[in-house]
Length: 358
Image 1: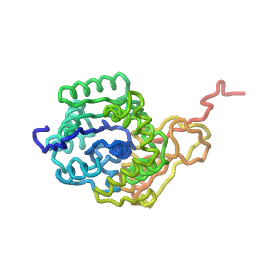
Image 2: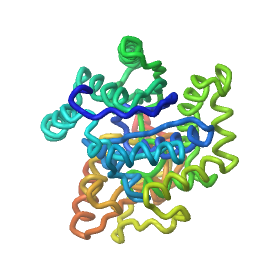
Image 3: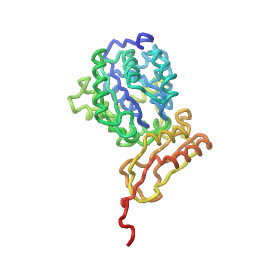
Image 4: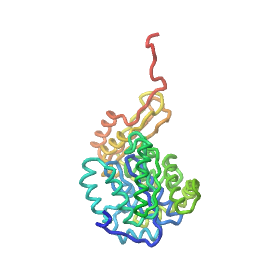
């Protein structure tokens, strides 16, 4: 696949990350890239548009800046600011892979393991990646559901990386529910900016700094086990935010953009807790299905905003999920689907009484 496309030589060590996908809301790239670039490393990130999800990383980044560039522009941007987040489809790095994705994976909603391995590593070779962290979300509703499966896939990645000359470390991450609270291009971009500015969900920041920390350790900028602390400092100090603003500007966006500047769908529906209790489950499949029914990723402002995650205590009538759409007709479809699928399950503390009589 690599031999069919363009290759870029940066003449310096290249750091990269990739997620195998399967979990909605996984906007960690928008935090990891500026963290790594703020550390003085080169991370020229090429990303995909949505294949089967409500938003690919390129779709989310496109809310903030342009993502379509030529190979020369890609190289120039990355060298200028130390990192970028652009759509890989226009670069022609692995055109054979792009054809397979568009003609096989997208229509059939599948991602065979062998194709996934080839897809990821062919594009990493094309950008000259020397060090790569791979995010493997694991859990119910993810592509990989058990730790044994995750370890097996990790071993295949690391061994293939060794054969290709790429140092790979896989991070097995929690994948049983969406990452953060926002699902859909504009909602995810908004949440990523909030996280870079010191707010945002704890889970999003924890996952981002954990994966970024692995790259920092691989670069020798942190000792083993301390990379996350260095990544936390780069995030909390505002250095990652400043770097992200540089990246946004280099890609033709507004470097001073604020979360509240990003337009989301004007049509909104809310789901409420049916009883007192706690959130027992947030379904990856159902959340993705509702967000796509609302119009994501084609309609950038469409998507889902979770008002609670697994373990949250709620009272009857509390909002548990909001649906946003750019068109009223799509909102109606998404809302009806949400009522059917119940993406957020609330259970009372008393599950059953026996005997039922007094």
